[in-house]
Image (tube, rainbow, N blue to C red; front, top):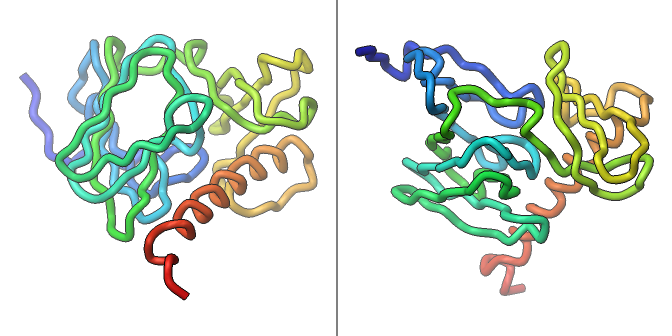
Length: 203
């Protein structure tokens, strides 16, 4: 038997820095057959940073507090999940969740049957500079960066997302710029969604 408090679990952020607090609770507990990660998301923060899927895991998200929106499938169907609610994704289902409210979100992500990701079984949607469109890309983690490789155009180019500053452009490298452009497009989509809400219905 093992016990742990949330405060004792160290923070391990996504390399894209799309949230400030992510705690791999299952790693501290030493689980072998499922993963449990604790999140605190500020408004606009994301659980993952991109639309992605796990071929080897089903995932369940429990929203303990706050308002989230999950984009599901290649058509990015939006599903709102509030405090006290859960949402499940089967293996191979594209999804991305983020804080769509004005208050901090506290939530959990559970995955099974493995306690860790098999990187060969993860795919992400991102802008491919060679295809000049969003494509499905394989994911690898190298030197603290996500390396994305297009699986559709056959170009074989990699996109590197720098952990230092994913929301600011500090390099002329076209591959890095394309990944930042993908993040910017997602932010614009969310701003457009908020602008079309009821609080904008009056002059």
